[in-house]
Image (tube, rainbow, N blue to C red; front, side, top):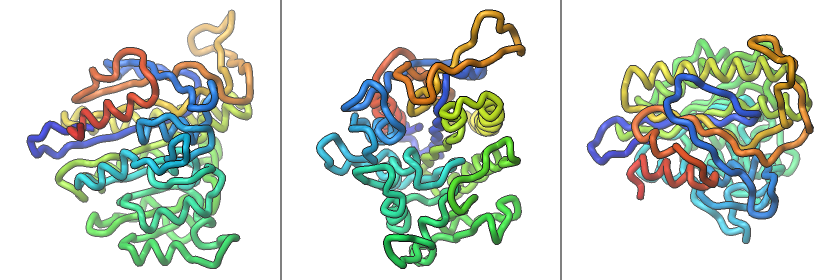
Length: 328
């Protein structure tokens, strides 16, 4: 997140993924974050994402609330207040833990329908992800949140009626695209929208505000592959995610004013490379189907990247981003 007070088109992106360490050789700066939550050495996604989104440690399962249940302002909400455009692109449902931590506030990550209620009244300008059923086919009430999104200025599309590649959203209206009724397909079953959607988001948000933007992109299903100890699925998810990162890095290299951060909520699966592995011939082995407490790498490229060197708590990512934005 870039903020030098000079009125430049400050461009900002935060990529998150959840897996064992992955080296991105084009990033000149690498740091490490410690991920423990307020109540457990091993964090879950909700607490991990909340730490990054708000700069505060919280209990596992909590969404943008502190450990006492008090509402925390998120980085996305603050960026919007400062006049920046904001967006999210994920390969999970849009109400899943990580995206939820940037726009909603809940005592538990599993209240998906409650989390969905935050989107029509939120300040987010652009989002792409699954989870349509939590908006228009709800169990707790008969609200149609799709209608409410449209009423609040969103152009809304979905996978059933539209092809994302054929849509050219106008930055004059906020934009939402649902890629699945619940969770999107895995990459190995031909889900391929993440790289394209990331570029589409950058283009849209640049046009939406001359003050810059904040975009959170998540390769969500890397985590799911590690939970299920499926190395083949993991390979496809990482390759899909790397295409998205590569696409945005090209844009960052061209404009010279984009800070790109790649990190994760936590590690999952305890993936290891064992004796006898060499080059491109490896046999990945998992030590667990749960999360681990290992430190997570933070890769940074662009103006302000040097701030992300070293070893620090996950909450520091929030403060470093605010410093880059000039919010301090």
